[in-house]
Image (cartoon, rainbow, N blue to C red; front, side, top):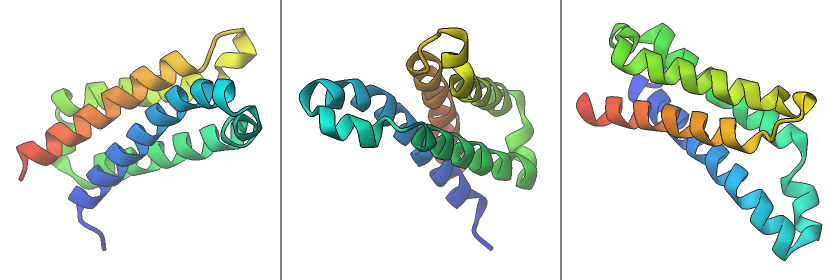
Length: 118
C-alpha cells in the first residue's frame, strides 16, 4: 500500500496541475487557438478536480494527523473551491479563480504537511 506521504505528494502535484491548467489555458488560447480546444475541454477540469479530491480524501481518511485544523481547514476550503469551479460557469462565473485559489490552498497544506513530518 502506498504511504500517506505519497498521497500527500500526489495531492500537491494534482492541485498544482489544476493551477497550471487554469493559468495556462488562457495563454494557450491566445497564442495557439488550436491547442486551446484540447486543453480547455471540460473533462480535463473534471478529471483533475476528481483526482485532487480523491488524493486529499485518502490522506484525510488514512492519517489521524491529517485531521488537525491546520491541515484540514485549508484542504477542505481548497476542495470546496475546486469543486465550485466545476459548476462556476453554470452561474456565469469564471472557473479559473476558485480553482486557482483552491489548488494553491490544497498544495500548500499538503506540502507543509510533508515537510513538517519529514
